[in-house]
Each structure stands twice: as C-alpha cells, then as structure tokens.
Amino acid sequence: MHTPLSAASAPASLPDDAEASFLSVRDVEKRFGAFTALDRVSLDVRRGEMVCLLGPSGCGKTTLLRTIAGLERQDAGRLHAGGRDISLLPPQSRDYGILFQSYALFPNLSVADNVAYGLTRLGRQERRQRVAEMLAMVGLSGSEAKYPGQLSGGQQQRVALARALAPSPSLLLLDEPLSALDAQVREHLQLEIRRLQKQFRITTLMVTHDQEEAMVMADRIAVMQHGRIEQFGTPAEIYRRPSTPFVADFIGHSNWLPFTRVSGSQVAVGALHLEIQPEEAELASGRLFCRPEAVELFPAELAANRFQARVVDRIYLGNRYRLALTADALPGQTLLADVSDEAHARIAALPANDGLWVALPRQALQVFA
Image 1 (tube, rainbow, N blue to C red):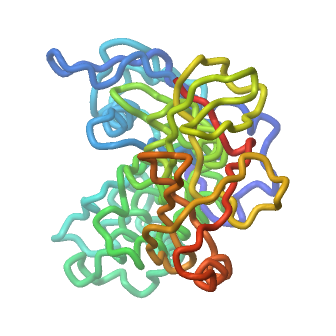
Image 2: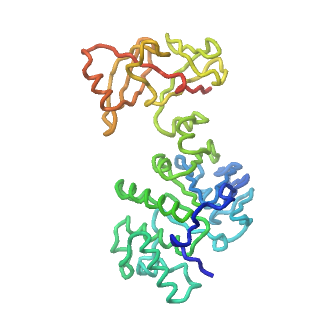
Image 3: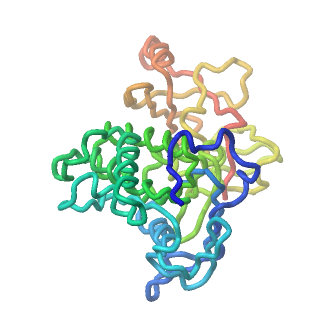
C-alpha cells in the first residue's frame, strides 16, 4: 500500500537503527576500457543521512551514483540498500528517486502529469491527491496545468524534485541538480532540499563539484579523486583536519610552507622556528598546512610562532578581507590571511610601510609529507 510522504507520516524521532548503514557500497570497481573510473570504492550511508560525493570532473563521483542507480553495471563489488542486495537488480527494482541537473521533465506533459509519471499503481483520485501534496511541498500549488516551458529553471527543478519524491522512495539520488541554476536560486534550493530531506528523513546521496554546496547540504562528505575516496567525514572534519594534501587544497583555501624538522615539536620554515603540536607526524621534512583564517593578527607579545609581516595585496570578499602577506623571515613565501572588517581597519590605521605582527597558532599547523 502507498504510504504518503507527509509531515504526519514522518517519525517523531529517528529509529534505534538510525546509525546503521542503509546504503552499503563494498569494493566497487568500474572500468571503461583501459580507464579505471572506480577503484575498489567502499562507502556507507546511514539511514536518513545526506552524503555528498564531492570532487573535480572525472574523479568518479557521477559514475558511482549511476552504478548505485543501476544505470551502470559495476565490474566488481557489491551494493546493498535497505538490507537488500541490489548489485544485479535493474534500476526499476532498486527503490530510489533520482534528480538530474537537466531536470529531465517531459515537455509535452503538464506539471501534474510529470509529477504523476511514476504513480501508475495508484488510482486516479489517489494520484491527483498525491500530486497536489507534492506540489504543495515544493511550493508550486496551482501549477498543475502548466507545462515545463512556462516555468523558470528553479521551478522546473522543484517539479523534478516533486516527481522524484512522489513514489516515496527509500533512497534519493541527486546528480548535480542545482548546477544549471543562477546563484540566488541555487542557494535557495540548497536550503529547501536540505529542509525537506531532514523533515522526511530521506536517505540521500548527492553528487556535486561545488565545495560550498557540499558544506551547506551534507551530513558527511566523501571527497573523491582518481576513482577513490580520499576522505569521508563531516564538513568540519574535512575542512579542519584534511587527511591528504589533495583534500586540503580542494576544500577551501590554504597556505603551504616547506619545513625541516628541528626537534619533536619544532620545525624550521625559512628563518623561523615554529612550534607544532607534538602529535603531528614525525617527518624530517615536508610541508606545513594552515588555513588563511587561522593566521592571527596582532598577537600577544608572548604568543608562539610570532613574527613580523607586510601586507602586499588585499581582496575584499564582502564579509571579510583576504590579505597577502610577505615576511623577511619567509623569503619567497606569500601567506594568505582572512580577517574581519574590524581587523582590516586596524591594519589600515598603521603608519605607511610599517610591518605588523602575525602568528601561526601551533594547533592550526598540520604536517604533510
């Protein structure tokens, strides 16, 4: 029997097995001729969770989504969803809704008929009621008789979302669904999709190349490169403690400083000796990684890793400034620092050609080979 996807049908709290894996991908491989698109990929998505597959073009994220959907057949590995082995099932037997970048609406069908397309098992009255529920949910009540060509891009994507959710699938797959929209509409729909996903606790896997979109929407992010998952964790984990140089560079902005080890918790960078956390990797040499917003301006006189620098360039980013700094103690290096309007005003008040004191907090420095 059809179960309506409505606020009334959503459980008041997550079930006891909420932390259990709903979607399990194990050692999946996919090759196109000599090219390996997926290289023994394993991934678990919890029930009711939104996971984003994030990475550059050609990293394998869309291939992984299409393999889970049954639109591509893996060369090796197993797939389970909701306790069922779906590895060899055809797409129509896998119980998912899918939303594409291109909307994929039927231009010759009305909005109502597009939404009702997958509801063939319902009677006419039930189907009409279901369509009305779905369009109300995405804010398009009253648009039933319109055709896709009469709608804006954002409205068409809402119709496509309503169609994907109408059969109450246990899994929602999103393939860069917002990349064709302008920035304002995209930001609005990011929050709208996230709200609906949380309200109805739909297990969701989304492909995107936009790191900000992944940060806004995902419970966890799988960063992919060369057909592999480089890191899988919460947005905060991936941003604050990237596990590989690729993740550090791909997510946000970064400073990289070559070092040589002086002692267990001290490294030499240029003419500076910097303190690092003792638990950092014991490498004789490598690179220090630091986020621009972690660079401290006007540190206390006794602050660790304090040195003088000069501002050589600045960019206004709306809610902050990004400064380019150079220091005599760091020849050939440019350091990026993100600062607030208030901190920038203090810098602007300094006498011309004066340097300023900055510091690199030890807890913000991460060691990479």
